[in-house]
Length: 263
Image (cartoon, rainbow, N blue to C red; front, top):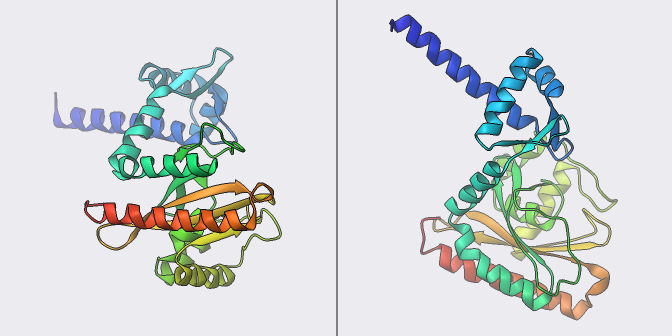
């Protein structure tokens, strides 16, 4: 095969990979299923071409044909997400402590991490006798300006980096308590940093309280956050303070473990 033909073949394979990635990126919480027509329009290709890409992804397990003329993400995506979470090394260290918190207080416990300008839920633990089950899924993207986890993850970043992230993100107001002005958020982050943890009340959901504390890695930077999400009306003031102390202590214990690892 000539060098020109080899280069042409490589470009075609590379173009196919790009198209496959573009298809996967079309899925979202608002669009968990896509039709071949939607994919062809998104790619700007003929429907037959889009269908060929879709079938390739189905064969590889990245997509599933629903049988209703649409496609959804396949089990291979879940496998990769699991591998990615395990590859971080945080899950193995954090899950036992998260499970203990969940069982002690019968609440939802999250492990989150900042990836680029997004807050990702890496792990979620719930108690067997959970008071209220909340819809936080592993792999979910959380809001950058609302919620204790997001604020804790931002609080230890340089202010210039925080402002860059906020400037490039659509800041949503979920309730009257949600902060959407960058100056107000930066000031809030300073108070969180001084306090060592974050509490939010009614900032994402009017009924919910979030409590989060940072996990520091071996280099001294914040690598993740552990948090509890609960319904305020179900917890007394005294118990709320007990939960805050437990979350902070858990974060300190986990940080001590992470300091011995290259995380």
